Image (cartoon, rainbow, N blue to C red; front, top):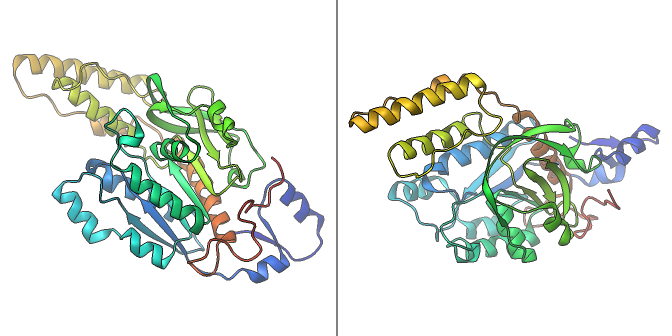
Length: 357
């Protein structure tokens, strides 16, 4: 929760200059304390639908323990779904039309699977455009994850993501590029983030559109960027919401597909994820599974439990801290009326009142 500069103590000014959230006494008196209402647009395929909602809702719930958060998952009817997934959505998800009438304070947009050469051909493209347009006028900030980042940068700035020579997959070290930005306060200046993607938007591409690069990696590229106003849209290319098992599940899926012949190339290990011991366990399984498959016998069980004991979560605390900072900023800027975008006195073109970082 933000500090209130209730007297002229110089420390308040110094902290504010360093990017800490410090409210003036007048601003604090205008701020009514209430719950936050957050939309979660889940565009992930059926197999990852529940896992994605759990990851993001869990991340929100593990943040600030004072404010109350209402999270409203919704999806797009244009996305192809199985009967089981549709039943889950029908029972537990919300309708976007209803959410527009009720109002939201913030919005999170997940990634999605793609099946076409360009994003504009995807079934989610047109309805996503509608959601993004509404959010730009009605929520304090939108947080985009991975594919959603690529889609919004294309929609808003007409910048195409670029295919990388090989999949960027693993856990990578990152550093802060804008230490005074409020969303990066009180986190390590170097931190890990998982990535799992074939495409990339480079620093040069972000900056060519006036977007602000906030954190990046020498090996994985930009992770965090923002809209030109520093806040209305926050872009992630990595996956701070991932559980410790997420990359292991992806590796297991690909290995089984390779053994069964539905994946042509042997999948590499996620970078900087397994230890040497873990790689040996995985290699032993793969060798045995291929041998057994050639004999026509049933392949052995994948050593998921054994490998899970070998991996560490080196990104969760920082991911939680960044999202917590984001939510804190939303809390301090959003309108008391859920149908309003910002509280009175906030400039929608510069909601954080940042001059330059």
